[in-house]
Image (cartoon, rainbow, N blue to C red; front, side):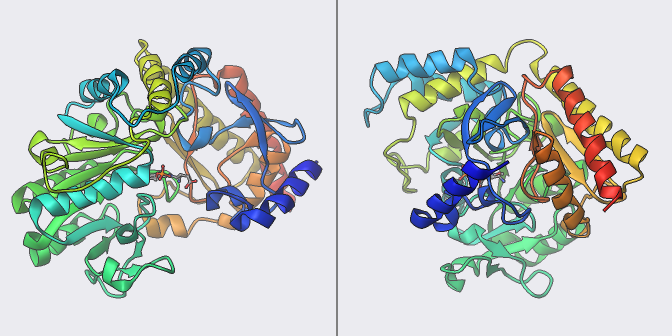
Length: 429
Ligand code: KE4
């Protein structure tokens, strides 16, 4: 039943392109009517029809402690009662910076911004300003927000510079961006041999979550670290999604690799707009007002948003938080695989910390090409069968899923039971 969602969607499309404020919300890759959410609590949210769903997007990562956590809500209410925004420094911003530097030791200094896009865009500008080089390296399938020089697809030939993936991005803005294959160490090595001393930075999702979940190999990240050090390029880990989600110290803690700059977001805002970029102090010294790399933001470090983020960061430091989160997420992944096997459906799943990936493929992909070969049509049908059963997965085969601390055994079991029915329907279609 989606009548109210249908009418809201029609109404929204009159005043907002596609009826949404971010494209993935429009259900265009899975089809059907997006659900307009009225409220959320714990592992659940309710749509305009008051239909309840088990939520596995969690606002695309921020809702790691669960929706409307009482502690977070109180922190926000208390902060809001003191005023919403001042455009002047506050003690809360110092606390947030100190907490980030404590939890992510590679970050010696950090600058708060309001979105992951701002964080990565600023990190790129910092790398270019600090090295006085123009070229950057990214990887196909990784998404770092919508800054012009990052909306790039691989060039036609190997090791050729990128072309815009979006209208409105001049080729001049992407001609310095080299797009390589994720988990291809040899190609990265070759790129540095050819362009190394012109490369300002390499930016990577150390655990990729924007081509579904794909984990970097340790060897790939180690090669990246070695080459950046050798050629004086800046290594940027985009941990906007995996930061504080795959482990308390992020992917860099899991892989034990120290990037030069880290971009953060999502969890550090707890659902409100907080993101950040930070790293080596000698690099951060290039940032205005002490350095020549300009970056600014009216709502950067907003006190209400910082209150939500700080209370979330405190909660995820409770003993055993990430161990339990990873265990619940793995329980979900293995349960879904078992359900698919019982139904005879070709399917696999993977998880790391509180992130998971679902693939209609024989094996878990490790490259963008392998991911693109998965059966997305089957994923789309599975998505809708699960939605009809009250389980809200990411509305795209190319997104990761997210578990919160509130996804308890009963909720995981209910999800697996819904999947048994969904897989059975797939076999009869
Ligand atoms: P935002 O500008 O959306 O806050 O962050 C951009 C960004 C940067 N880096 C990574 C690794 C990201 O995953 C993101 C944003 N993630 C998407 C989810 N695929 C946000 C959802 C959306 O675009 O609506």
